[in-house]
View 1 (cartoon, one colour):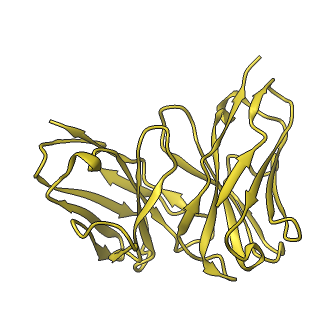
View 2 (cartoon, helix red, strand yellow; view 1 turned 30 degrees about the horizontal axis):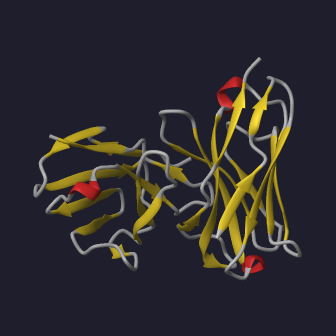
Amino acid sequence: DIQMTQSPSTLSAFVGDRVTITCRASQSISSWLAWYQQKPGKAPELLIYRASYLESGVPSRFSGSGSGTEFTLTISGLQVDDFATYYCQQYNSYRRTFGQGTKVEIK
Amino acid sequence: QLVESGGGVVQPGRSLRLSCAASGFTFSNYGMHWVRQAPGKGLEWVALISYDENNEYYADSVKGRFTVSRDNSKNRLYLQMNSLRTDDTAVYYCAKDWEVGAAGGYFDYWGQGTLVTVSS
């Protein structure tokens, strides 16, 4: 199976900060990567697909980049509503895998 | 919309069947997934069934114990869980694959989840 490794596991930031989360794949997945946001007690929600395409309705402060094995999710101008846990997921393989998650906390 | 049901408390070694009712899209056109999340842990993909039921894929952790199925006439997805273990305790989500037919996409819709607790 393709392993996905996210860093950092936890990130503390102020409102208004620019934050970056990294996701690495154990083998090339081209651009078949999605990012999800999950808030406590809720189902995950899709933010970005195909590494850099913003899902409809998602604020433009979210952006994604990368290809192959290295990917990033950037939030430009962190808002209170953005404090949550973020997961990357590869869909290069039928057997999907997620990163372990990055929790974004208020500093 | 996706609505899971069937969760509850079950003893180790016993069985449980989860159900996911789909509405608002042509269910029979899309692959469907199960994803779980143990308490305080991350997301774990569990299983995929193709739109036409011809293909199934499983995580190693559940292979041979869990079976995914669907009834396209009822717009329903199922997860039969046998030989349950304490480490199967989790919230189980059903999720819709974005891609028509091939089930090679990301997950664009998720249910709210149903909690399965395996405990003696």
